[in-house]
Length: 301
Image 1 (cartoon, one colour):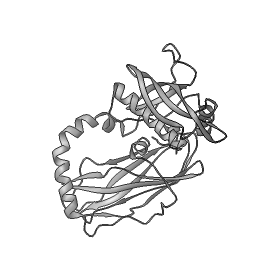
Image 2 (cartoon, one colour; image 1 turned 180 degrees about the vertical axis):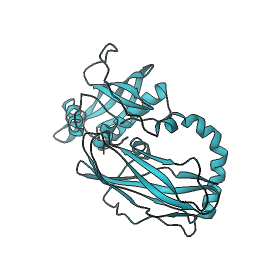
Image 3 (cartoon, rainbow, N blue to C red; image 1 turned 45 degrees about the vertical axis):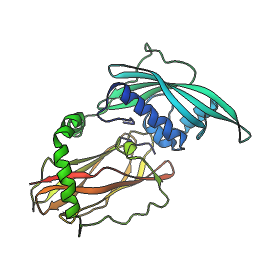
Image 4 (cartoon, rainbow, N blue to C red; image 1 turned 90 degrees about the vertical axis):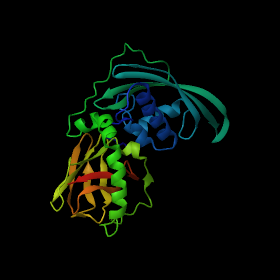
């Protein structure tokens, strides 16, 4: 699954060493777990044109899916919006499908900040990446999400107390809700919410009025080079929030395409309430994936 990704990157609101390391860690972990599509979602460059290219180039260096026993990121350096790090990996070698010892492999990464996100733009399996090499010109078009993403640290600090109260109210309000539509995910590969958050964003209004119809926008950005097919978003709505259509179908989202859908809701009482268990189900490169994101909080006046 190339998610994502929204751009393929690892961290919202983080900066410096932490953001670079988190992105590279997500890339390597996804690859090693066999989710090459998700690993590819953290990447934007010319080394790998499609997820299969990534897998082939790693395999040519005797790094196959599931062979990385452990890794450590060293020598992380961040200069403005560009970072470099080296993954020191203990890799199991195989001969005729049988383990034949381990070997230390070094993988070199360059990570660039694109908008509010960090994405890997170069991976080198042969040697360090020079800071003099030309950077990838990766651009993310401005969206209505940017002000929210850029101000997450500020917003979160102010609203912690209110969110705690919202949790209490939400638990009291859940009885009789619209519920979660039934969607078969038995054959879907689970995806971590951190990966999903790179390409899907929920944008509620700053506040809602009790008894009045309003919207919760959902933006999906395909940063990969293959389409997301049959993408559906569903959620569990509390009894105090009526929703016209809890399951939204986005259909097929092509490479580089951004699509917005909207939940039409009517909250009935004031207070902080949550749309819980938002879930994304979609197909990518022949596989089916699903994952759950954080609750969506509504400020109802």
